[in-house]
Length: 210
Image (cartoon, rainbow, N blue to C red; front, top):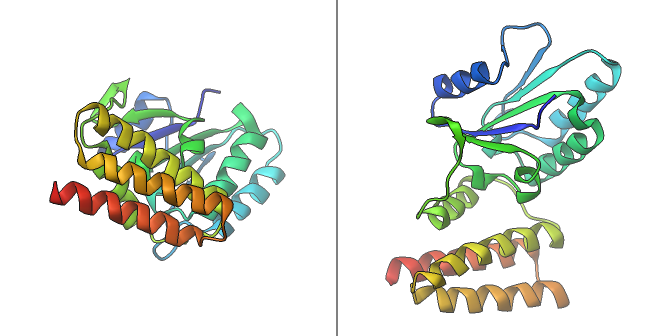
């Protein structure tokens, strides 16, 4: 089995075209599809999947997640653990409208594909920062753990460094603010959600007023 695939796709038809190209047939009996329950993909859905796969034995399975950008951070972490435990035993495919809605720890374990360019991995674009902040605003979840908040802030800092290299001077103040909040988060009792919200809002406002 190959790496899990993370597919950025706005249209289901594009996503299904990628699945076919990857040899994943959604009509097969061994395919499991998971959609958001109400608005989100919840940790209970990942736990149920884990139990099902445990009892499935050595049977081959294809697990397809739709609208994974709506997965809570808790469910993303649970899926990451499941990926680590199952290894290449099962085939996973995750559909998202923006890859930046997915934790970098999951992205690092996946092969990222742009549905409109199925022959090549997703390329870097000039609007990475906008995609990242938009995805965070859209994702209705709560950041409760310090480590989760640190991951998000570090990724924001990486994107801000790109802007600094492009001589976008507004990014200097945004970077300073993010570093300050990262230190407060690491060494003080700063609320993780508050730290993330302040970093994103500050970067967004500075960019828009530049």
